Image 1 (cartoon, rainbow, N blue to C red):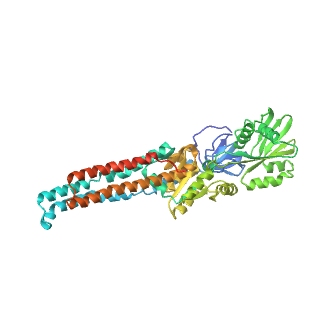
Image 2: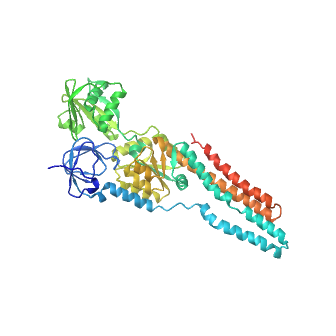
Image 3: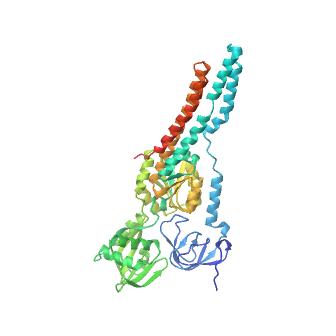
Amino acid sequence: GSTEEVPSDQLSVGDLVLVRPGDRVPCDGTIEEGRSALDESPVTGESIPVSRGPGEAVVAGSINADGALRVRVTRAATDNTIARIIRMVEEATASRAPTQRFIERFSTWWTPGAMLVSALVILVPPFLLGWDWWTSVYRGLAVLLIACPCALVISVPAAMASGLSAGARRGLLIKGGAALEEIGAAKTVAFDKTGTLTEGHPKVTDILPAQGTSESDLLTLAAGVEQGSSHPLAKAVVAAAEARGVATPPVSDQAAVPGKGVTATVDGRKVSVGSPRHAAEAGAQLGGLAEAVTRLENEGKTAVVILADGTVAGVLALRDEPRGDAAEGIAALSRIGIRSVMLTGDNARTGAAIAKGLGLDVKAELLPDDKLREIGALRSSGSVAMVGDGINDAPALAAASVGVAMGGGTDVALETADAAVLKDRVTGVSELVSLSRSTMANVKANVAIAVGLKAVFLVTTLMGVTGLWPAIIADTGATVLVTLNALRLLAWKPSA
């Protein structure tokens, strides 16, 4: 009958664990006793806390919002949800082949080939073309100097370094040249929803007072009941009241009904804030607001009914709303020929509502391993970039051609991703693509300069038009030109 605190990795199947309000669930298990709302967004992406009661499953990593729970462990620490996500990340990372650049393959043959050509210029012409040995040695050395790969070798890293620096100055952090190259080749960008395309926390979107009640009165009642609560929906209601300058009155007799709602006495009135189902169980009649509740839920919003002395005072709607630049960011990707798709663990109704407003495809109710499979399917038709911020996104970030994390995301996402967008800007994804394409265009121009100059001076040297000193100037000049061309990238700015 007593409790003791133990490390989560020492829990065994069959143990009974007490999870208090505000605690993070330490194991995969089944609720034996208690009812509470669980914030599962770090693991599943579900944006709104979900009600869980006896007999229902809970996952490691979710957060207990209000009621105390007794959970029976069903999986050992080495096999729980978090452990499986870690293994998926490791497997996905290990399966990724490193990018092989053309210049790396080319340079393998360049120097031996140049030495062979120089030797042939020295040895063959005296016998076949009648050159004297001084002329053939002089021109052979000039050919060897022209073939010096300095400009060619520096052409790629100089451009990459400039591109990485230009991105960092604008809040686009990229882990190396291979990732920078891959981003521009993406045909599809897959977005997580919660915390990536959306703010990551619910906001009050609609205030529908019943007849005889004003919006400010409705907010006063709701905020009074919800003040002091750590529940995400409660924080959203209080924030909405503060934003509208509605004073929060003193309350008494605050109590939570786990998984259903919250009650309190506000200005002498018994007020409760809960789900439409809870209101129906209390015998309240929604009347004309019933149709509005259905409409709001079809829009992917969470409807909350406020009762005052057993009578419906009104309805509030809450939803995790898209970031201010989300639609602009999706449109920018579309303009440069990249398809966008949303992969979310949230429910299908909410996912479809958000996706419709932003103009992209959606696949909802995906667990981490489901996202992994979706990324694999998308990669079969071309390079894929995955953008996410949570623990549940880590396997998909690792498995994608290139992973991009939001700067405000979890440490796991930031560690797994190949790039990060600071300030959590959705438009930063299209900027990454633009920067990558500008950098690769610069790389191609540098290679053309390096190889083109050498080809020209190789021909003129063999013809006797140019000698050793012009060859020296050409080699040094090519190095200077590719460096200056690469430095142009430091002035790169995202297109409007």
